Image 1: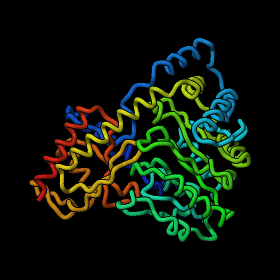
Image 2: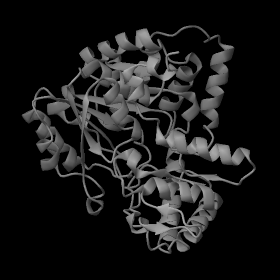
Image 3: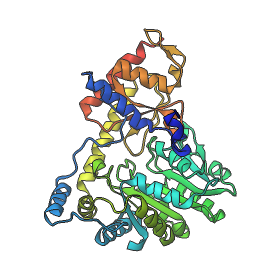
Image 4: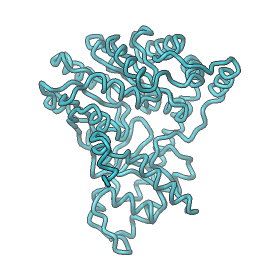
Length: 402
């Protein structure tokens, strides 16, 4: 009998499982056995969706918004997204430039699948979100990763970014604020990237701005707002992070019409339109006062400061200060080569994460998943008391390594 696995497609066999999802799955398995696991592996706000947004969803159900939606989104939602781009980002879009999808992840996948042919190169600014590489591989593109050092918040120099561009490069892909590092690109840095795009007219930039509102250093800057490259940028955003709407599954992109039309076309064959109730709630989210989002960001900043203070008592963690998002991304290579009291070898970040899960009962994610093998990612999107307990456990577990 033919081995079942041999019947699977090459594209699924070469795709890696998301390690953020994988670590969270392992944490749930331990929790199901009655073990008190603190899960700091997921990028999910622990705050409830604001009440006014939930009420808008209930109203939409009562008003009968229960039918198929236009593939690219309700017209009034697309207008609300255009207004948001103008208000917050200084980007001028018409509704025809907007495609609403089932999360920012689908928006990124739509754009990559519409732009990248087999053999095309995609320059990814790393450390990168786990799905970037796999989405590029799904499109049969070639990922080319360019990363910086911790001293510069892992942001690569613009010379290194340009040096990675070849005649096969089709896309430059990055996030700001960054998942996993929390780095935020400044206006000056984006101006430099715009100059690179001007020198390479066949390259499109995909800017993932899903953490836009979780910014601790001031005004968010968008590459798409720079006039000379506005027709060369796909801007990705959504509701999951800034509005605490992870389970609602709504993302969107703003792009030149030819790209938006292509994304509409591919989505029409994959998923069609996004959840109708979520779309109605999204209008309320985008058009209402951003006070709840700002308050949430204030709380995340307080948590960031708390966990950075906790890290001062753990000498083996080498941290940068994240300017946005809700992650620490410490270098942990000082623990490589050590052993647990039971004799388990810690050879890499994956070993260290499994040790912390099994012995400290804290779930974090190895940096290999993000293109930084010397790091681990720790989410501080958890309640204060959980974070305090988690870092106490981490400290005690690391102290006994030898």
